[in-house]
Image 1 (cartoon, helix red, strand yellow):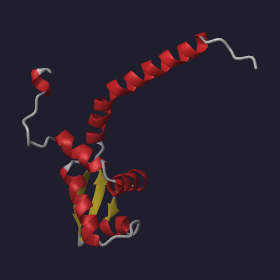
Image 2 (cartoon, rainbow, N blue to C red; image 1 turned 180 degrees about the vertical axis):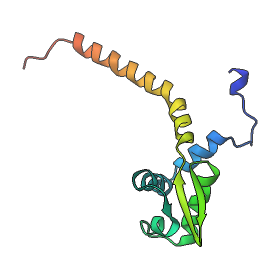
Image 3 (cartoon, rainbow, N blue to C red; image 1 turned 180 degrees about the horizontal axis):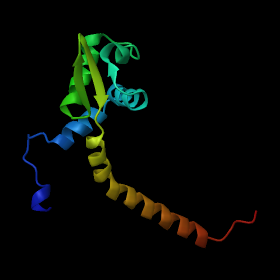
Image 4 (cartoon, rainbow, N blue to C red; image 1 turned 90 degrees about the vertical axis):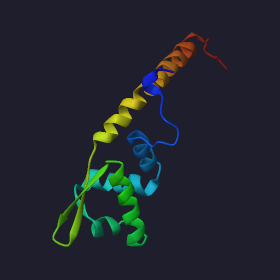
Length: 120
């Protein structure tokens, strides 16, 4: 393992916070809403869920701490906006795995092409 890959035990990194935030269905749905509909007030987001506002506020806090959303006050409202930069970092992290599976499927396709056709 390279020295740059070593992490201190018990120390949560930005990457860890992003993956933890994305692990929850409700938080992924909040991100989808913000991606598709743009910045929204907390109440507009809450209208999409059957949960109390304090529960939604906790989800929004996790997303904020992961850097996936930003919060802006507009009068008495809090407006949330998608911040996609951490998602690009996740995509960069996943890229070698995409390559891995693409190579595996290519190999499987080549194997299937070499197999004789079954003429039943």
